[in-house]
Image (cartoon, rainbow, N blue to C red; front, top):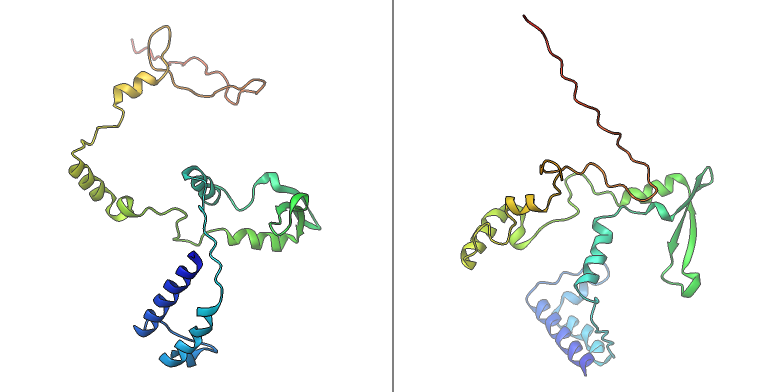
Length: 209
C-alpha cells in the first residue's frame, strides 16, 4: 500500500538525517538527540497507520496561474467586498472555509485601526519584491543566460519577435493620408469621453519686413 511505502521511506530518511547529525532538538525534546532514544521514539510510528492524501494538486497550468495572480496582481481586499465604513468600523464580506454551503459567506466588522493593521500585513517591506524570476530569467544573469540559450539552440535574437514593419502594419492608418493613427481613447456604448477634441494648431508669425 502507498501509505506503508511512504511511512517506511519517510522514517528511513528521518533516521539517516539523525545519524548524519542534520537534526537539532530544542524545547522538550533534547533527550532524543541520543541515537538509541531516537530509535525508541520512532518505534511507535512504525506501527501507526499513516494516511496518505495523494491527488493532483491543481487543475492544470491555468489553475496555477489563476491562483498565483490573486496574490501577485491584486491588493489585500477588493473594493467590491467592502460594505460600509463608519465610526463603528469597517464591514466587509469574507469566506469562512470552515463552514459549508450558504453559511460560508459572512460579514465581518473590524475597528478602523484593526482593519488597517490587517491590511498593512499584506504590504511588502522596503526592498522586497512580490515577483522574482529564477533560473534562466534570474535578474542578475538573465541577459547572459538568454544569450547562451539562444546560442545553444541556434536561434537568432530576432527570430520569433515581430519586426518593426510587422508592428506598424497592425496599427490603424488614416483613410485619407495613410499615416499611422494614434488611439487616444476607446469609447464604450453610453460612456462619456474623457478627452475633448483637439483644437487646430495656432501658428504665430512675426513680420520682420
